[in-house]
Image: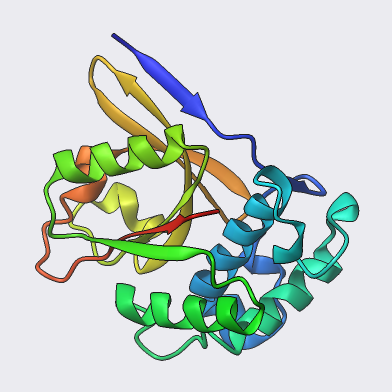
Length: 202
């Protein structure tokens, strides 16, 4: 039985979510995905979870200028670096510090390591999306060249579809939506893996 669930998201101009290419800071332009994924997660929660305090600008007028300022502020907590933010714990530490500083410590973070089984990842993502919350996904290296665009990258998961040929997730990154087959994405073929971070209590 097929099932599809897509969360209502947000647009900035014609961009589906934010876009890392807008950043003029060199480090943020090439390596700001962790910070900007966090920005996108918080904008979503501000808009669709009744938490306007999570976005410090005008929710009724989402625009590139404010988004870039938000991203540069988040850079203080999730500083791009050589090798990237490749550990779930590093990401969670930075996000938690930001949330504490902004009096939003009610949001709790939970990690799912990339070495967990596909079935575990599938079930966790389904439960998160069904709860009306997106998730932050980290993919490191992948043996399948069709995923080159997503290598060493953080992005938002905001939907899923169960089809006869597999389980697909909808992801948002670089201002666009993509559908990826999770069993293929999850099995990277490398020992060093990423994983998923779930925002809870929002």
